[in-house]
Amino acid sequence: MIEGKRFNIRHVCKHDLERLIPLLNNLALRGDYLPFSMTAPQLIEHNLERDSLIPDAPERLLIVDKHDDILGALWHFEGVPYFNAREIGYILYKADQRRSGVMSEAVAMLCDYVFKSRLLNRLEIRMDTNNIASEKVAIKCGFQKEGVARQASFSHGRHVDMNVYALLRSEWEQMRDKCPSVHA
Image 1 (cartoon, rainbow, N blue to C red):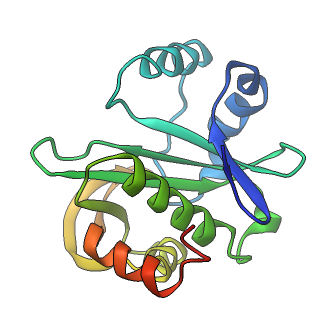
Image 2: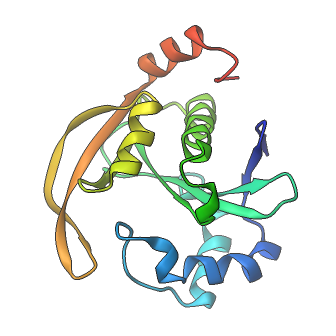
């Protein structure tokens, strides 16, 4: 578990699935920018069990408050197989927590965790070019915009352009050295 001041980040456990599956499949909670599709509960459970046995599989984590209520989720996975990188994603389920800095803090914690636990040179975030909130999270966490992938994703019945942001290990190390209390 990664302990923060306001919330913790931890792995998804089997006992979480009863609370998590309705959140994952609630299309209204996904907003306008995540894929508009549901996944069968049995497949979610199967993937969770399968991925826990594969070293470089996607890692799914929960953002939970101090009472262990689910606030959101984070994940990281291999994007382009020949890059020394992982792509990260995130969602905040609790609308009352938006604009409170929870996601920026959680992404910073995830970056620290991934850079400290894996021999990677970069983390990437890709978001719909209209997703201003996600772009603000990336910028606040030190990610640099590298460009736009035109019509790279299909969401809500249309192809959308995606901003590509990246954080290099050397940039993360500089931020960590300047502000060690944030990057503990």
